[in-house]
Length: 423
Image (cartoon, rainbow, N blue to C red; front, side):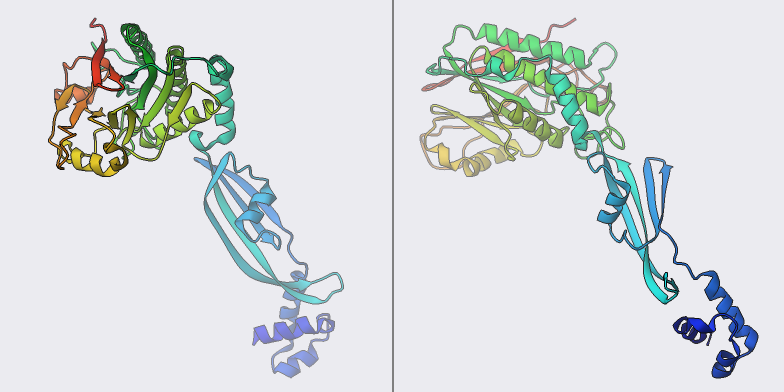
């Protein structure tokens, strides 16, 4: 009954100020009841004004908008608060409606749908903060050679040998145990020393191309939040923040590639590991962008977890080694690289992951006398020993980087090694 009386009075605003008797007789209720309803209507006769609130909470900010006829969606809220989406993510948003009845400026009763909305904002993680990434990029690159320094160089591209350099499983950010000190500066020193040593040892070969395999757990973690962890989420102890590991690793790879490009054309093959699957793709994308206009550096950052490089009648396949078992490789190689198998005589698969040398020769499962076998090599690492490996007894492997000299016509000709000095 009260709702009916209220609606009637709103439609007849001239009955709101003292003439209550006719209304009470019309609805068969007491005079005082009508007057009470009319008084409440007069007290709420003005439509509410929009109000906005901002509240800092743990891990972000909560924004809310009340009594609004404008802010009806998330896009409206973003515009109303001028939210910079390059710096904030919005994981939670809710909006509700309610009706308010009042009078407009002509004292005509009006019912309007009002909106209340609320959103929680969180700062974007480092790898999604485009503005900060761009700023850090230019800061890091300022100390490196500009693109013009490695563009358009003339090399002996007719060289009959290809030099493959494999410095696998560097694990930037790993913390070494006592007696096996390891940090990012040590990792950089080992990488640079290995490349310089392997280039020196290969000086007697007519090298026309360098294939530089990067990745294979180049970084110790893939995720920094909510705690440092591998791609699958296994917690890891690291020596510094995930952001600094990424920036350090990016700068180190560009230094390494520039060093190699002084000798020959460099083809970079990016192989993600089980520790850094997503981060290595991001880093490979940065390398691809940095060398986009270079005539002497190319980058293979394709989506495949297994990649290859063909040199003459040799095919070298690269795979991290954490997924596929060795006995499965002949069939997988045959299926993935069927288009080039008829043009090669020598096939090897080079893998990381185990941190020590291991060679196998599984028999190929198809009838073609041109292929006598498939060589699988697990290659060493130069990284230090952490507590987990020490507890498991995985100690004693020689820390080293590898290089392979491949002939256009006769397959593998030499394997060169850089052994980390034993202190």
